[in-house]
Amino acid sequence: MLLKARTESEELFIMRSLNARMDLPYNEKVHLYNLEKGYEGEVKFDLLAESLLEERYIMNDLLLQVNNSYFQIDTLIISQGLIQLLDIKNFEGDWYLKDEILMAVKTEREYKNPVLQLKRCATLFRQLLQNLKLDYLVDSSVIFINPEFTLYKAPMDQPFLLPTQINHFFQDLNSTPSKLNDGHKTLAQQILSLHQTKNPFVQLPEFDYDHLNKGTLCKTCLTFSLSIESNRLVCVKCGGHETFEQAILRNVAEYKLLFPERRITTPRIYEWCNMNMSKRTFTRVLKKNYTACSVHRHTYYI
Image 1 (cartoon, rainbow, N blue to C red):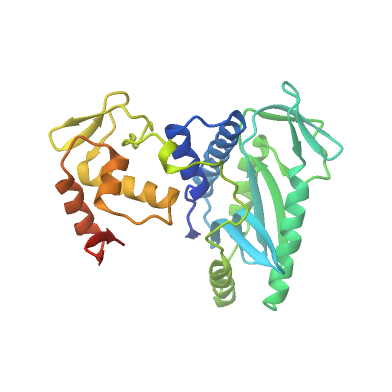
Image 2: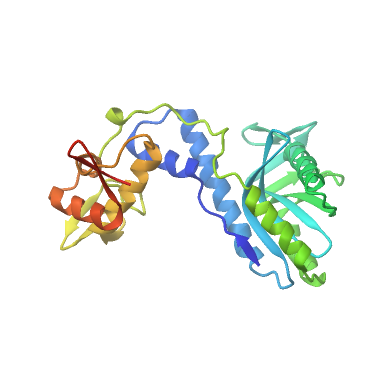
């Protein structure tokens, strides 16, 4: 049973927006690429996880804190006799392990062995269980989800699941009986209640309102290639389309994410969207979907 679905992170949303509205430095473009690639791999895993048959609780994208330390879990699976912590990697190409470094053969790109981070995660999770006065067996694995990934001389003593082993992993789970009880339900509820919605360690590139390109981005291809056709916005590049109201509300959400300290007003959203339509349309949409507040005859929306 899926208790917490995976969603695109605020960081990914913000980085996509900034990439479309400003010239990101090269290192930030690489960071965005890695975010996109990571999310793509996690979604692939989620599709495979839909094949699980026995009773299990599945929670994705958990950010937990214990003893003033934060740790993230890509996927947590609660079964009858086991809790599994899964770290999903979407690396591709040829790699090898050198000491505690994972290295790409072609580019000599270096990563810390993900097992080191996974061990820290498992240790902190066990501490969390101890704080809750609970005793469950915990296992952890790094799953390399991309079928184009090869790890030369893969060590037998590392908790790696390589692409050719993933189907067997799910077959093993499905062949292992799992019946959940009220204790498992309580545990899942406690974990969900401890999930942190804001990641304090996200570092975004510097940006300000005046230097971002204004306009409405296509919801699909994130370009400014939109034209007005009847009562809809249509992308001339990819064919994506939506109503005026949908586009305005999407822009408001983007604006709030980028500038949470700024008030939402008709003039500001009108300027941000930069659509060739009347301000009355914006006011109508804002009044319909938000609560209007007034300060000194100035109206803003919450």
